[in-house]
Image 1: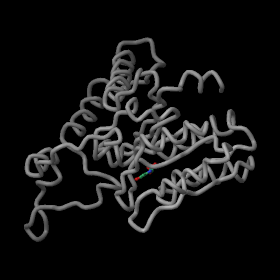
Image 2: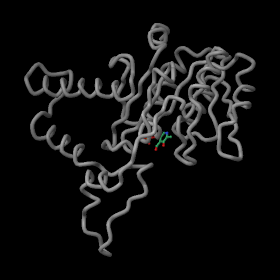
Image 3: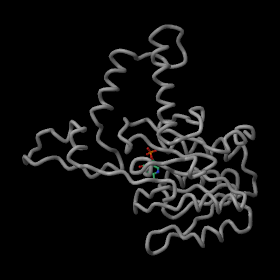
Amino acid sequence: MDGVTATPFDVARIRQDFPILSQPQARGRPLVFLDSGASAQKPRVVIDAMVRCMETAYANVHRGAYRLSELATDSYEAARGATARFLNAADPREIVFTRNSTEAMNLVAHSWGRGVMKPGQAVVISELEHHANIVPWQMLRDDRGNELRVCRVTDAGELDMDDLERHLADGKVGLVAIAHMSNVLGTVTPVERIVALAHAHGAKVLLDGSQAAVHRRVDVQAIGCDLATSCTGRPALAFSGRGWNTSTACRPSWVAAT
Ligand SMILES: Cc1ncc(COP(=O)(O)O)c(C=O)c1O
């Protein structure tokens, strides 16, 4: 199933995890919150962890030679390990924390895009991208002249794989930057096929995993995306300002090239 596995969803049990869903409502009915794709309510375990951190272990991370700072640093690095396990990244050192997906995409566009991509290379995105995965490539095009190609979506809301192949055919594409799951249509893209096709034409793949990582188990090694998968914290039940960006298999060569 293209590197994702559906998980069972017991609504009554899951509701109990979210304190806000038990709050009395004006009309006496249980709260139903439908905007989780944009920003999810926070479960008790996340709220408690934040409070525990602020009350017992808050200090500068990686910049203090005293006990509290060491505790904070250990927690921070443990979160990197947990994130790597969550996404099945090969090594926690592949995880780079950013404020959100938008920052992660911009980080890739500003570092890899400007540092490694050659002037004649193109970027392929698709019609179902979030603007976080459009604007950085428009800026790269405007600043550096890298062509931006847009892959079509079929009337059924699926990525048009024939169109993707057409865009890749001339071998000039350096990067395919594509959503794993659309925030608008809910479309799950065939990521393993996309990666195989892109690699066959010499292109790297950046997956925008912002929605997929919330709804499904994502295995970045099985998918084989070689540049980066980014996930945003807000819909993933974390507090605002927490996202992560994980680069996978080809990271060593990527890093060596930058
Ligand atoms: C598919 C997708 N990509 C990128 C983003 C951008 O995330 P953020 O606003 O946290 O940077 C979102 C936000 O919901 C999204 O759904």
